[in-house]
Length: 269
Image 1 (spheres, one colour):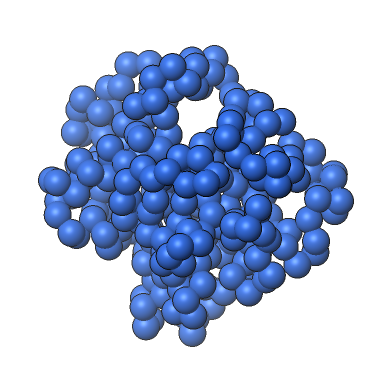
Image 2 (tube, helix red, strand yellow; image 1 turned 90 degrees about the vertical axis):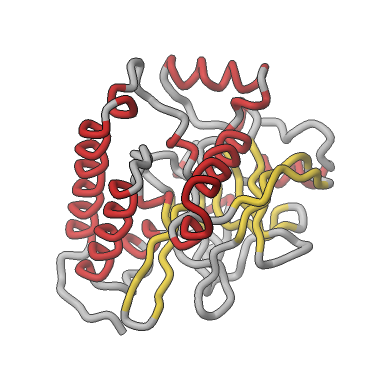
């Protein structure tokens, strides 16, 4: 496994430590306080806001995904940095995803970071500041001592720590009841349909949860699927009707997963 070129020796060692291909070796790789969970879709490592945050070459890791690693910006804790991983560090995918990765290596504009930045800027230009209530703000591609990164707002909880992911709230620390989380899914789904936004990757690991009084809000922290379609012929992007139906199916699937993970009723504290 290799770190991005130009990275320090400590960074290379840290990237190697963060490899998560073998679940059985987790005990050797992470302390009991730092290790928390794997996301089933793309298996990133994430950490609870209460735990001792793992340090990655001096950076505080927020999560690790199939293609990127997200860390808190050391220069501004209100922001985070998303680094694209090299091919050897990424999870295995099918032929279409391999082709997309191959193209991204040759055309930087097709990489995950630039794709997500392009999505955010297009939606912000069309919808204005209202997108900030639903999507993590993307500021731009920045040069760091660790390599190029996409700088975004770090969505924070009331205590100033990174807000927990929806997956964390379902399978690690079940702090919120299913009805409140499903209502948050309803509001996000309504927003997508109302504005014809083809965001179909509604996985628990792509959202963080913020609490505002007695209301929960989902903030999407990975929007690149708006432009990165997995369909050979993207009919659901060409047809508003098909788009809305697909959004509704994905939202219903997410609600079903919430109810399956949190079968017991509860109240929002």
